[in-house]
Amino acid sequence: MPDPVPFSAAAPSVRSLRHWGIAAAQSLLAAGTGLLMFLVAFGMLLEEFADHPPQGLMALAAVDALLGATASLAVGPLRFLPPGRLHSAAHLLLAAMAGFSVWAAPAAGIALYRIGLRRRAVLGLGAVLLVTGSSLAQLSADTRFRGEEPDWAVLAAVGVMMVLALLPLLFGHVVATRRELLSSLRERAASAERERETAQRERAADEARVRAEERTALARDMHDSISHHLAAISLYAGAMAYREDLPPEALRRTAGTVRDAAQQANRELRMVLTTLRTTEGDQPLATAPTLVGIVERGREEGRDIELEWVGVSEEDLTSHDRSAVVALARILSELTLNAAKHAPGAPLRVSLRAQGGQVLLRARNPLPAAPASPPSTGHGLLGVQERARLLGGDARWRAADGTFEVEAWMPW
Image 1 (cartoon, rainbow, N blue to C red):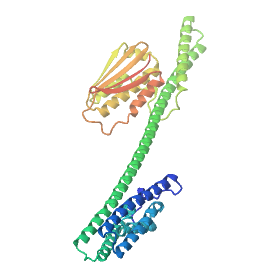
Image 2 (cartoon, rainbow, N blue to C red):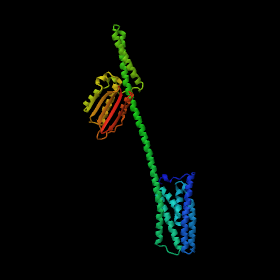
Image 3 (cartoon, helix red, strand yellow):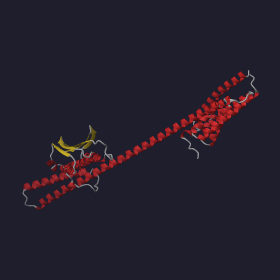
Image 4 (tube, rainbow, N blue to C red):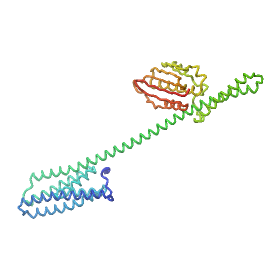
């Protein structure tokens, strides 16, 4: 089974002027360098035989020049061949010319580099064997034309040619490996970025769901509260309609009670219209736990919880805006659950402070020595923040100095 063609071995576009410029530069560089090497070698040959070398050596020099010029002109355009059999055969032929022609050596080096880019062991081995065989044949012919017998020097020269052939092959292999590694790293980075964006979208969807659930829960609470006020209005209005014996003072008090209940119901109705429709599962307002009840329930479960009242008392909550009271109860319930889940056994200190037209609920607990398992998604805190914001307040949380603190505030 053939090896897959690596990214770096893909053929460049023949329509690109830039690539044609590179091809021309490669041919010119191979031709110029090879011609210089040929002239040096030919000059040494003439000097060795006093300008009268044997005809056989002159024939070898002519073949050298012919092969070198052909290889130099062909090496540039051959870069446009797509990886395949024709590409391999053409570059193996150029590599073999290195043994017969000094002039063709630079072009053969480029061909060997391209074969190395393919990263196929069979091609590399074949190229080295061709260079070795052609070098052995050329050196044997040169020795015979000189009237000498082949000796160890010929074998040494062949070994040198083999090493020289290996250098561009290995260099091409390293370059292809590096390009493929970079391509793989880019793909992994792109995949990681896509996963990160997907995770962000999923987290945003989870946050939106949590906020929607809190708006739905608040809408249900307000629905129960409005129903309570409407029932009170109906009761007192019915009393005024059927009790003709009521004194004027009692009528005024009853009418004031009806007016207050109607105003409160109107305010809470406006808030309900900004939230979603109700869903099943949460406690109705009539049975919503109180702050003291939440703390006492936590203590019964063995948790160390303290509640401090500053500027407000439990009695003040019974006569205040029911929506804010229920929101405080929901928030405290979530905070106690959060502390029990992520810092089990740690003391929880809660304070409720009323000042400047606002009520502030603060909860603090020590951070656990080991991270929570499973890790927190933060949805509960998002729900706390959303509930506070729906009432015109806000919430924030932070971890510092070994303590986790949550603050939620709203108009009072």
